Length: 310
Image (cartoon, rainbow, N blue to C red; front, side, top):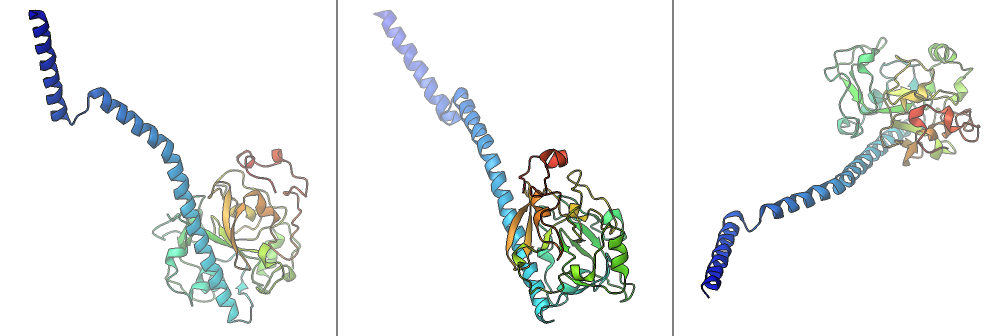
């Protein structure tokens, strides 16, 4: 009887201490807190990759929106010249040949659409380096610039330019002065003024790229251009035309780049798919770096072999 009463008193005392503990520490024991923390950590581990993918997808949408706007600006520019495109001085970082210069003359306020959200930091934020030095070259996740365009014939430009998009330079009127043909001939060509598109009024415009994710402001892709040997293969530079397809061959969107086409459509383009687009009038879309041309997966640099074939 006495033992039973003592046992009840002991149990009552234990229950009282438990109630006081819960009242003081919020109603959780140490084990319960550890279980809750473990569950939260597990949920975070599951959700973080998903959140990261959603964030990257949102950035890709903004990137495509930027490119669409550049496409609209180009069409607005050419509409004032009966559909004709601008004159292209071969590989000159010079206004008015520099596309960002001549496109923004009548389209101010384009600062916010110059960079893909995946590559917003400029190679030279101060703009102190020469526009033809490696210090202003971009990368997969770095914008090119800032630099002040050279203007040997037109005077000095005080505005600094930067961006992470490049233009297909075949979309222009060839500079008949001869400078362009010297440079392209040195890049294994036999190209003529007839290779340039010169106008936006072209059949098959849906397959003609205009602006794309890039580590430089322009490129002259050719069907036999070699692919980038690594993710940030910025050779040759400055302004060499040989293998310039690699300027667009950047893994900025998980195996893809974004592009706006001459019909103003915007879509993502697989890195290997770049060689299948119609870059200039005589471009061979079944060249040696396409499935139709017989390329095999082992022919690609190791970093590109996991990407989709075209």
